[in-house]
Length: 485
Image (cartoon, rainbow, N blue to C red; front, side, top):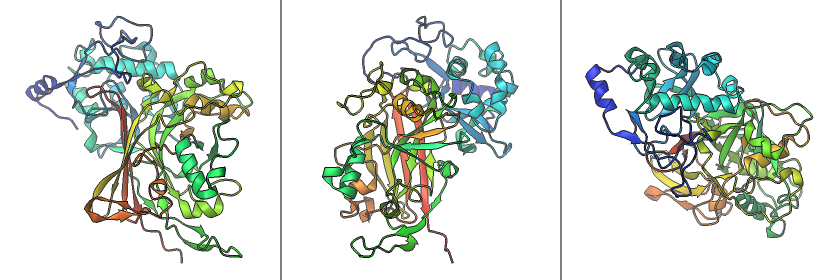
């Protein structure tokens, strides 16, 4: 619990207040639209999804400039504490988590009648009910919280000058436990990283058949296992499965063994917030309204299991051992300005995949650290989510073109994000050329694939220091396989 004396609190308020230089990946000085609910000094109100780069706004909280959780962000998650072990919604702000259940109970939303009438969603144990309220409600809640947290807040009694509520609702993030933010009903993993798709295709099928004929015409995907989606920090066991030890043998007889070629897949994840009726496809230019927000994702993969089982229906047990996602969901509006061109696709697309909005692919800086059991840490990849062939609206449009009904809490994975330069690949199998060349790690260690005791940490962010919109991290440690018999 945050328990500060009046003098200590004043020092915190007067500390190194955060400059709210708003997300502007293009690096220009153009004025973006913003909501006038955040501060009276902002008067452009045509679009409440982003805040202008030209205006400096400070938070009364002391937030480090390098924090992923600036006031420009306001990501949502599910937390519990030692004092109250019931999972409940919260937002991350700097080094703190604002408990939205306590904040709502303490009158934090009293200034907004529209939010208050639906504030029961902040007592739920997942974000599904909040997500289902729709993009307008998400936008209003985020804007209200930014207004409450800004240095010149018009609602000082909502939190800043309300010591009792601060002590109850504003918690150090180091003292909270994060939970899976959404109850995942269905999980679909796309294959939109063209560079990765090509590299893996070359290994499995040769360069002449690396990309299947359909690849440039539609967003390829498979349905994954929702039950094994886990929150960051959850350890995972090395899987058992069928492995073809000698691919050249005749006849081909597999063995039951533990995976020897365990790998990561660096991905972005996206949660759905809106349902379409069964039989009613989502138009591509309306699909953005179905996006709740984004997470980082590691789609753990057992390559030796995958090589044997993936024909003819795609991966199965090679993928269902676990999929890790980051704990905080970055709302779609928070990344409205973090979009640009993806991988060019000169193939003529069918009308249902043709977007009016161009340059609609997220531009998130990504990096991956591998930490061995000996504690040696090596950054093994740095890339950007612009290395995708398809946008999220195109993925939604294709997923639903058959009439498939999407539901709040459905999770989409982007597919592995790889660049074209060395050390920009989103998987180890690409970096080691299928295990032929070992990666050299700090401390003299090396890897061809993951070993027991290895921990992977993925980080991602957009924007400038002082106004970063980041995800924190998604991490996971590989534990030895359970003995079967």
